[in-house]
Length: 464
Image (spheres, helix red, strand yellow):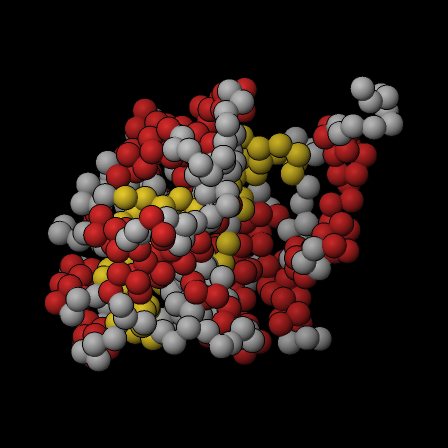
Protein backbone atom coordinates (compact mmCIF):
# COMPACT_ATOMS: atom_id res chain seq x y z
CA UNK A 1 0.00 0.00 0.00
CA UNK A 2 1.16 3.53 -0.72
CA UNK A 3 0.73 6.44 1.66
CA UNK A 4 -1.70 8.95 0.23
CA UNK A 5 0.09 12.05 -1.00
CA UNK A 6 3.60 10.57 -0.88
CA UNK A 7 3.80 7.70 -3.36
CA UNK A 8 2.01 6.25 -6.34
CA UNK A 9 0.92 7.88 -9.56
CA UNK A 10 -1.96 10.35 -9.83
CA UNK A 11 -2.31 11.66 -13.39
CA UNK A 12 -4.95 14.27 -12.60
CA UNK A 13 -2.84 15.73 -9.79
CA UNK A 14 0.30 15.74 -11.95
CA UNK A 15 -1.45 17.66 -14.73
CA UNK A 16 -3.04 20.07 -12.25
CA UNK A 17 0.30 20.78 -10.63
CA UNK A 18 2.53 21.00 -13.68
CA UNK A 19 0.32 21.34 -16.76
CA UNK A 20 1.01 25.06 -16.84
CA UNK A 21 4.69 24.33 -17.53
CA UNK A 22 3.95 22.69 -20.87
CA UNK A 23 5.79 25.14 -23.14
CA UNK A 24 8.77 25.48 -20.78
CA UNK A 25 9.05 21.69 -20.46
CA UNK A 26 9.19 21.36 -24.26
CA UNK A 27 11.76 24.14 -24.49
CA UNK A 28 14.01 22.45 -21.91
CA UNK A 29 13.63 18.76 -22.70
CA UNK A 30 12.16 18.23 -26.20
CA UNK A 31 12.38 20.01 -29.56
CA UNK A 32 13.22 23.54 -28.39
CA UNK A 33 12.25 25.05 -31.75
CA UNK A 34 8.60 23.98 -31.42
CA UNK A 35 7.59 26.36 -28.61
CA UNK A 36 9.69 29.08 -30.22
CA UNK A 37 7.84 28.68 -33.52
CA UNK A 38 4.42 28.53 -31.85
CA UNK A 39 5.06 31.70 -29.86
CA UNK A 40 6.35 33.53 -32.95
CA UNK A 41 3.16 32.99 -34.91
CA UNK A 42 0.80 33.24 -31.95
CA UNK A 43 -0.12 29.56 -31.91
CA UNK A 44 0.99 29.00 -28.30
CA UNK A 45 -2.52 28.08 -27.21
CA UNK A 46 -3.53 26.04 -24.20
CA UNK A 47 -6.25 23.57 -25.11
CA UNK A 48 -7.95 21.92 -22.16
CA UNK A 49 -10.25 19.38 -23.76
CA UNK A 50 -11.39 18.09 -27.14
CA UNK A 51 -14.30 16.24 -28.67
CA UNK A 52 -15.15 15.43 -32.26
CA UNK A 53 -13.89 18.20 -34.55
CA UNK A 54 -13.39 20.78 -31.78
CA UNK A 55 -10.93 21.88 -29.06
CA UNK A 56 -11.83 24.09 -26.10
CA UNK A 57 -9.42 26.51 -24.44
CA UNK A 58 -9.24 27.63 -20.81
CA UNK A 59 -11.84 30.35 -21.49
CA UNK A 60 -14.31 27.79 -22.80
CA UNK A 61 -14.01 28.97 -26.42
CA UNK A 62 -14.27 26.33 -29.11
CA UNK A 63 -11.74 25.93 -31.93
CA UNK A 64 -12.57 24.09 -35.15
CA UNK A 65 -9.98 21.48 -36.11
CA UNK A 66 -9.32 21.39 -39.86
CA UNK A 67 -6.03 19.54 -39.40
CA UNK A 68 -7.05 16.33 -37.57
CA UNK A 69 -3.58 15.81 -36.11
CA UNK A 70 -2.09 15.58 -39.64
CA UNK A 71 -4.89 13.13 -40.51
CA UNK A 72 -4.68 10.89 -37.44
CA UNK A 73 -8.05 11.99 -36.04
CA UNK A 74 -10.21 10.69 -38.86
CA UNK A 75 -13.14 10.11 -36.50
CA UNK A 76 -12.43 13.24 -34.51
CA UNK A 77 -11.25 13.16 -30.95
CA UNK A 78 -12.54 10.74 -28.33
CA UNK A 79 -15.10 8.87 -30.38
CA UNK A 80 -17.22 6.95 -27.84
CA UNK A 81 -17.08 3.64 -29.73
CA UNK A 82 -13.28 3.68 -29.87
CA UNK A 83 -13.04 4.76 -26.23
CA UNK A 84 -15.28 1.88 -25.17
CA UNK A 85 -13.26 -0.61 -27.21
CA UNK A 86 -10.09 0.48 -25.42
CA UNK A 87 -11.70 0.31 -22.00
CA UNK A 88 -12.99 -3.16 -22.89
CA UNK A 89 -9.64 -4.49 -24.07
CA UNK A 90 -7.87 -3.17 -20.97
CA UNK A 91 -10.53 -4.65 -18.69
CA UNK A 92 -10.16 -8.01 -20.46
CA UNK A 93 -6.59 -8.41 -19.11
CA UNK A 94 -5.55 -10.31 -22.24
CA UNK A 95 -2.27 -12.21 -22.45
CA UNK A 96 -0.87 -9.73 -24.94
CA UNK A 97 2.45 -9.83 -26.85
CA UNK A 98 3.53 -13.23 -25.56
CA UNK A 99 5.26 -13.66 -28.94
CA UNK A 100 4.56 -17.37 -28.88
CA UNK A 101 0.84 -17.56 -29.58
CA UNK A 102 -1.63 -16.39 -32.25
CA UNK A 103 -4.11 -14.00 -30.59
CA UNK A 104 -7.43 -13.39 -32.38
CA UNK A 105 -7.49 -9.58 -32.65
CA UNK A 106 -4.71 -9.19 -35.27
CA UNK A 107 -6.32 -11.84 -37.46
CA UNK A 108 -9.73 -10.20 -37.13
CA UNK A 109 -8.40 -6.74 -37.98
CA UNK A 110 -6.42 -8.10 -40.94
CA UNK A 111 -9.57 -9.83 -42.20
CA UNK A 112 -11.58 -6.61 -41.97
CA UNK A 113 -8.88 -4.49 -43.65
CA UNK A 114 -8.46 -6.95 -46.51
CA UNK A 115 -12.20 -6.86 -47.18
CA UNK A 116 -11.67 -3.31 -48.48
CA UNK A 117 -8.89 -4.50 -50.83
CA UNK A 118 -10.07 -7.94 -52.00
CA UNK A 119 -7.15 -8.38 -54.41
CA UNK A 120 -4.74 -8.44 -51.44
CA UNK A 121 -4.21 -11.37 -49.09
CA UNK A 122 -2.04 -10.64 -46.04
CA UNK A 123 -1.18 -7.89 -43.55
CA UNK A 124 1.85 -6.93 -41.48
CA UNK A 125 1.08 -4.73 -38.47
CA UNK A 126 3.63 -2.20 -37.24
CA UNK A 127 3.34 1.03 -35.31
CA UNK A 128 3.35 3.98 -37.71
CA UNK A 129 3.09 5.17 -41.28
CA UNK A 130 6.82 5.31 -41.84
CA UNK A 131 7.12 1.74 -40.52
CA UNK A 132 4.40 0.61 -42.94
CA UNK A 133 6.41 2.16 -45.79
CA UNK A 134 9.66 0.60 -44.54
CA UNK A 135 7.93 -2.79 -44.57
CA UNK A 136 6.73 -2.28 -48.13
CA UNK A 137 10.21 -1.26 -49.31
CA UNK A 138 11.83 -4.29 -47.69
CA UNK A 139 9.21 -6.70 -48.99
CA UNK A 140 9.40 -5.29 -52.53
CA UNK A 141 13.19 -5.56 -52.64
CA UNK A 142 13.22 -9.09 -51.28
CA UNK A 143 10.34 -10.35 -53.40
CA UNK A 144 11.76 -9.01 -56.68
CA UNK A 145 15.46 -9.43 -55.91
CA UNK A 146 16.05 -5.88 -57.12
CA UNK A 147 17.52 -2.92 -55.23
CA UNK A 148 15.97 0.29 -56.56
CA UNK A 149 12.71 2.05 -55.63
CA UNK A 150 11.17 4.83 -57.71
CA UNK A 151 9.21 7.66 -56.09
CA UNK A 152 7.73 11.02 -57.07
CA UNK A 153 9.31 14.41 -56.69
CA UNK A 154 7.86 16.28 -53.69
CA UNK A 155 6.53 13.03 -52.21
CA UNK A 156 6.35 12.43 -48.47
CA UNK A 157 6.59 8.83 -47.24
CA UNK A 158 8.05 9.18 -43.74
CA UNK A 159 11.23 10.17 -41.95
CA UNK A 160 13.06 6.96 -41.04
CA UNK A 161 16.02 6.20 -43.29
CA UNK A 162 14.28 3.88 -45.76
CA UNK A 163 11.19 6.03 -46.18
CA UNK A 164 13.34 9.17 -46.15
CA UNK A 165 15.20 7.73 -49.15
CA UNK A 166 11.93 7.92 -51.12
CA UNK A 167 11.01 11.33 -49.71
CA UNK A 168 10.94 13.81 -52.55
CA UNK A 169 11.65 16.92 -50.50
CA UNK A 170 15.25 18.03 -49.96
CA UNK A 171 14.44 19.89 -46.74
CA UNK A 172 13.77 16.59 -44.98
CA UNK A 173 16.73 14.78 -46.57
CA UNK A 174 19.49 17.37 -46.07
CA UNK A 175 22.15 16.28 -43.60
CA UNK A 176 21.03 12.65 -43.32
CA UNK A 177 23.05 11.12 -46.18
CA UNK A 178 23.98 8.55 -47.23
CA UNK A 179 20.47 7.36 -48.05
CA UNK A 180 19.37 4.39 -50.13
CA UNK A 181 20.09 4.78 -53.88
CA UNK A 182 16.55 5.40 -55.06
CA UNK A 183 15.30 7.63 -57.88
CA UNK A 184 12.70 10.38 -58.17
CA UNK A 185 10.45 10.84 -61.20
CA UNK A 186 7.94 13.66 -61.86
CA UNK A 187 4.37 12.95 -60.80
CA UNK A 188 2.32 12.08 -63.88
CA UNK A 189 5.31 11.55 -66.20
CA UNK A 190 4.92 8.03 -67.64
CA UNK A 191 7.86 8.44 -70.01
CA UNK A 192 10.24 9.16 -67.13
CA UNK A 193 8.86 6.16 -65.26
CA UNK A 194 9.39 3.89 -68.26
CA UNK A 195 12.96 5.10 -68.79
CA UNK A 196 13.88 4.11 -65.25
CA UNK A 197 12.10 0.76 -65.50
CA UNK A 198 14.02 -0.07 -68.66
CA UNK A 199 17.23 -0.27 -66.62
CA UNK A 200 15.95 -3.54 -65.17
CA UNK A 201 16.87 -2.94 -61.52
CA UNK A 202 13.63 -1.43 -60.17
CA UNK A 203 11.84 -3.31 -57.40
CA UNK A 204 8.86 -0.97 -57.05
CA UNK A 205 7.33 2.43 -57.54
CA UNK A 206 5.86 4.00 -54.37
CA UNK A 207 3.26 6.73 -54.76
CA UNK A 208 0.68 8.68 -52.76
CA UNK A 209 -2.59 8.43 -54.74
CA UNK A 210 -3.08 12.08 -53.78
CA UNK A 211 0.22 13.79 -53.03
CA UNK A 212 0.10 15.35 -49.59
CA UNK A 213 2.57 18.16 -50.26
CA UNK A 214 0.53 20.64 -52.24
CA UNK A 215 -2.43 18.25 -52.59
CA UNK A 216 -1.75 17.15 -56.15
CA UNK A 217 -3.95 14.53 -57.83
CA UNK A 218 -2.26 12.43 -60.55
CA UNK A 219 -3.62 12.87 -64.10
CA UNK A 220 -6.59 10.62 -64.99
CA UNK A 221 -5.41 7.15 -65.97
CA UNK A 222 -1.89 7.65 -64.59
CA UNK A 223 -2.02 5.06 -61.83
CA UNK A 224 -3.48 2.38 -64.13
CA UNK A 225 -0.88 3.08 -66.83
CA UNK A 226 1.93 3.13 -64.26
CA UNK A 227 0.77 -0.22 -62.90
CA UNK A 228 0.81 -1.75 -66.38
CA UNK A 229 4.33 -0.44 -67.01
CA UNK A 230 5.56 -1.75 -63.67
CA UNK A 231 4.14 -5.22 -64.16
CA UNK A 232 5.48 -5.39 -67.70
CA UNK A 233 8.93 -4.77 -66.22
CA UNK A 234 8.32 -7.19 -63.31
CA UNK A 235 8.25 -4.38 -60.72
CA UNK A 236 5.65 -3.67 -58.02
CA UNK A 237 3.24 -0.82 -57.32
CA UNK A 238 3.20 0.42 -53.72
CA UNK A 239 0.31 2.72 -52.75
CA UNK A 240 1.14 4.88 -49.74
CA UNK A 241 -2.31 5.39 -48.23
CA UNK A 242 -1.04 6.51 -44.82
CA UNK A 243 -2.83 9.85 -45.15
CA UNK A 244 -5.22 9.21 -48.04
CA UNK A 245 -6.57 5.86 -46.82
CA UNK A 246 -9.39 4.94 -44.42
CA UNK A 247 -11.95 7.13 -46.21
CA UNK A 248 -10.07 10.44 -46.44
CA UNK A 249 -10.69 11.03 -50.17
CA UNK A 250 -14.27 9.74 -50.39
CA UNK A 251 -13.26 6.15 -51.19
CA UNK A 252 -11.91 3.75 -48.59
CA UNK A 253 -8.55 3.81 -50.41
CA UNK A 254 -7.67 6.71 -52.69
CA UNK A 255 -6.37 4.43 -55.47
CA UNK A 256 -9.95 3.18 -55.83
CA UNK A 257 -10.93 6.42 -57.58
CA UNK A 258 -9.36 4.90 -60.70
CA UNK A 259 -10.79 1.63 -61.99
CA UNK A 260 -8.46 -1.29 -62.55
CA UNK A 261 -5.78 -0.14 -60.11
CA UNK A 262 -4.73 -2.97 -57.79
CA UNK A 263 -1.46 -2.15 -55.98
CA UNK A 264 0.80 -5.00 -54.95
CA UNK A 265 1.41 -3.41 -51.53
CA UNK A 266 -0.68 -0.83 -49.65
CA UNK A 267 0.48 1.15 -46.60
CA UNK A 268 -2.02 2.49 -44.04
CA UNK A 269 -1.77 4.09 -40.58
CA UNK A 270 -2.93 7.41 -39.06
CA UNK A 271 -6.77 7.21 -38.95
CA UNK A 272 -6.73 3.45 -38.30
CA UNK A 273 -5.55 4.29 -34.77
CA UNK A 274 -8.73 6.11 -33.83
CA UNK A 275 -6.37 8.78 -32.51
CA UNK A 276 -5.35 6.67 -29.52
CA UNK A 277 -2.89 3.83 -30.12
CA UNK A 278 -0.23 4.10 -32.87
CA UNK A 279 -0.70 1.48 -35.57
CA UNK A 280 0.57 0.92 -39.09
CA UNK A 281 -0.33 -1.80 -41.56
CA UNK A 282 1.16 -3.06 -44.81
CA UNK A 283 -1.26 -5.02 -46.98
CA UNK A 284 0.14 -7.21 -49.71
CA UNK A 285 -0.24 -10.09 -52.09
CA UNK A 286 0.17 -13.64 -50.88
CA UNK A 287 3.21 -14.43 -53.07
CA UNK A 288 5.13 -11.43 -51.70
CA UNK A 289 4.60 -12.46 -48.08
CA UNK A 290 5.43 -16.07 -48.86
CA UNK A 291 8.74 -15.05 -50.42
CA UNK A 292 9.70 -12.96 -47.40
CA UNK A 293 8.57 -15.57 -44.88
CA UNK A 294 9.79 -18.50 -46.97
CA UNK A 295 10.65 -20.92 -44.15
CA UNK A 296 10.36 -21.38 -40.39
CA UNK A 297 13.93 -20.07 -40.13
CA UNK A 298 12.65 -16.72 -41.48
CA UNK A 299 9.55 -16.50 -39.27
CA UNK A 300 10.89 -13.37 -37.52
CA UNK A 301 12.87 -11.91 -40.41
CA UNK A 302 10.62 -8.85 -40.25
CA UNK A 303 8.75 -8.04 -37.06
CA UNK A 304 7.89 -5.22 -34.65
CA UNK A 305 8.06 -5.38 -30.86
CA UNK A 306 4.73 -3.63 -30.37
CA UNK A 307 3.15 -4.72 -33.65
CA UNK A 308 -0.28 -6.35 -33.36
CA UNK A 309 -0.70 -5.30 -29.71
CA UNK A 310 -4.22 -5.77 -28.39
CA UNK A 311 -4.95 -2.08 -27.77
CA UNK A 312 -4.02 -1.06 -31.32
CA UNK A 313 -5.96 -3.96 -32.83
CA UNK A 314 -9.05 -3.15 -30.76
CA UNK A 315 -8.85 0.51 -31.78
CA UNK A 316 -8.54 -0.47 -35.45
CA UNK A 317 -11.51 -2.83 -35.28
CA UNK A 318 -13.60 -0.13 -33.60
CA UNK A 319 -12.60 2.44 -36.22
CA UNK A 320 -13.69 0.17 -39.07
CA UNK A 321 -16.99 -0.55 -37.33
CA UNK A 322 -17.66 3.19 -36.98
CA UNK A 323 -16.66 3.80 -40.60
CA UNK A 324 -19.43 1.46 -41.71
CA UNK A 325 -22.08 2.23 -39.08
CA UNK A 326 -21.83 6.00 -39.52
CA UNK A 327 -21.17 5.94 -43.29
CA UNK A 328 -17.98 7.94 -42.84
CA UNK A 329 -16.65 7.38 -46.36
CA UNK A 330 -19.85 8.73 -47.92
CA UNK A 331 -19.74 11.73 -45.57
CA UNK A 332 -16.15 12.49 -46.57
CA UNK A 333 -17.20 12.38 -50.22
CA UNK A 334 -20.30 14.61 -49.94
CA UNK A 335 -18.95 17.06 -47.36
CA UNK A 336 -15.66 17.29 -49.21
CA UNK A 337 -17.43 18.12 -52.45
CA UNK A 338 -19.51 20.79 -50.69
CA UNK A 339 -16.44 22.40 -49.12
CA UNK A 340 -14.36 22.23 -52.29
CA UNK A 341 -17.11 23.66 -54.50
CA UNK A 342 -17.85 26.55 -52.17
CA UNK A 343 -14.16 27.44 -51.97
CA UNK A 344 -13.67 27.05 -55.72
CA UNK A 345 -16.51 29.51 -56.28
CA UNK A 346 -14.34 32.18 -54.60
CA UNK A 347 -11.51 32.03 -57.15
CA UNK A 348 -13.19 34.67 -59.34
CA UNK A 349 -13.66 36.94 -56.33
CA UNK A 350 -10.08 37.00 -55.01
CA UNK A 351 -7.03 37.76 -57.15
CA UNK A 352 -4.67 35.87 -54.87
CA UNK A 353 -6.77 32.70 -54.75
CA UNK A 354 -5.57 30.65 -57.72
CA UNK A 355 -6.84 27.10 -57.28
CA UNK A 356 -8.87 24.77 -55.08
CA UNK A 357 -8.27 21.06 -55.63
CA UNK A 358 -8.29 17.64 -54.02
CA UNK A 359 -10.55 14.71 -53.32
CA UNK A 360 -13.01 14.17 -50.49
CA UNK A 361 -11.83 15.86 -47.32
CA UNK A 362 -8.28 16.37 -48.57
CA UNK A 363 -8.30 19.83 -50.12
CA UNK A 364 -5.55 22.19 -51.26
CA UNK A 365 -6.11 25.96 -51.45
CA UNK A 366 -3.41 27.56 -53.60
CA UNK A 367 -2.53 31.26 -53.67
CA UNK A 368 -0.71 33.09 -56.43
CA UNK A 369 0.51 36.42 -57.76
CA UNK A 370 -2.29 39.00 -58.08
CA UNK A 371 -2.81 41.30 -61.06
CA UNK A 372 -3.53 44.67 -59.44
CA UNK A 373 -0.51 46.85 -58.71
CA UNK A 374 -1.08 47.44 -54.98
CA UNK A 375 -1.60 43.79 -54.16
CA UNK A 376 1.19 42.72 -56.47
CA UNK A 377 3.75 44.91 -54.69
CA UNK A 378 2.83 43.41 -51.31
CA UNK A 379 2.91 39.90 -52.77
CA UNK A 380 6.34 40.48 -54.35
CA UNK A 381 7.69 41.80 -51.05
CA UNK A 382 6.56 38.63 -49.24
CA UNK A 383 7.95 36.34 -51.93
CA UNK A 384 11.31 38.10 -51.79
CA UNK A 385 11.56 37.28 -48.09
CA UNK A 386 10.35 33.69 -48.29
CA UNK A 387 7.92 31.80 -50.47
CA UNK A 388 4.98 30.55 -48.44
CA UNK A 389 4.53 33.60 -46.21
CA UNK A 390 1.18 34.59 -47.68
CA UNK A 391 -0.31 31.18 -46.95
CA UNK A 392 1.03 31.49 -43.40
CA UNK A 393 -0.56 34.94 -43.19
CA UNK A 394 -3.92 33.30 -43.93
CA UNK A 395 -3.43 30.42 -41.49
CA UNK A 396 -2.59 32.74 -38.58
CA UNK A 397 -5.77 34.89 -38.55
CA UNK A 398 -7.86 31.79 -39.19
CA UNK A 399 -6.73 30.60 -35.76
CA UNK A 400 -6.25 33.87 -33.89
CA UNK A 401 -9.39 35.65 -35.11
CA UNK A 402 -11.70 32.81 -36.09
CA UNK A 403 -10.49 29.93 -33.92
CA UNK A 404 -9.90 27.52 -36.83
CA UNK A 405 -6.74 25.38 -36.95
CA UNK A 406 -5.22 24.75 -40.40
CA UNK A 407 -1.74 24.22 -41.86
CA UNK A 408 0.44 25.36 -44.73
CA UNK A 409 0.85 22.33 -46.98
CA UNK A 410 4.64 22.36 -47.11
CA UNK A 411 7.74 24.47 -46.81
CA UNK A 412 8.00 27.22 -49.45
CA UNK A 413 4.45 26.50 -50.70
CA UNK A 414 1.61 28.97 -51.04
CA UNK A 415 -0.91 26.20 -50.35
CA UNK A 416 -3.12 25.55 -47.34
CA UNK A 417 -4.09 21.90 -46.86
CA UNK A 418 -7.41 21.00 -45.26
CA UNK A 419 -7.60 17.50 -43.76
CA UNK A 420 -10.33 17.82 -41.13
CA UNK A 421 -11.93 14.95 -39.22
CA UNK A 422 -14.11 12.93 -41.59
CA UNK A 423 -17.14 13.51 -39.37
CA UNK A 424 -17.56 17.23 -40.15
CA UNK A 425 -20.71 18.42 -41.85
CA UNK A 426 -22.40 21.50 -43.28
CA UNK A 427 -22.07 23.49 -40.03
CA UNK A 428 -18.28 23.19 -40.12
CA UNK A 429 -18.19 23.96 -43.85
CA UNK A 430 -20.18 27.16 -43.23
CA UNK A 431 -17.89 28.19 -40.40
CA UNK A 432 -14.72 27.62 -42.39
CA UNK A 433 -15.93 29.30 -45.60
CA UNK A 434 -17.22 32.34 -43.67
CA UNK A 435 -13.91 32.71 -41.82
CA UNK A 436 -11.81 32.17 -44.95
CA UNK A 437 -13.88 34.77 -46.80
CA UNK A 438 -13.32 37.30 -44.01
CA UNK A 439 -9.57 36.72 -44.05
CA UNK A 440 -9.37 37.01 -47.83
CA UNK A 441 -11.47 40.19 -47.76
CA UNK A 442 -8.97 41.71 -45.35
CA UNK A 443 -6.00 40.60 -47.44
CA UNK A 444 -7.42 42.01 -50.67
CA UNK A 445 -8.53 45.25 -49.06
CA UNK A 446 -5.00 45.83 -47.74
CA UNK A 447 -6.02 45.14 -44.14
CA UNK A 448 -3.38 46.68 -41.90
CA UNK A 449 -3.28 44.04 -39.17
CA UNK A 450 -2.76 41.19 -41.61
CA UNK A 451 -0.02 42.88 -43.61
CA UNK A 452 1.65 44.21 -40.46
CA UNK A 453 1.93 40.66 -39.25
CA UNK A 454 3.34 39.78 -42.67
CA UNK A 455 6.19 42.19 -41.93
CA UNK A 456 6.85 40.32 -38.67
CA UNK A 457 7.01 37.05 -40.58
CA UNK A 458 9.37 38.60 -43.13
CA UNK A 459 11.75 39.69 -40.39
CA UNK A 460 11.73 36.16 -38.97
CA UNK A 461 12.33 34.69 -42.44
CA UNK A 462 15.23 37.04 -43.07
CA UNK A 463 16.72 36.46 -39.61
CA UNK A 464 16.30 40.08 -38.50
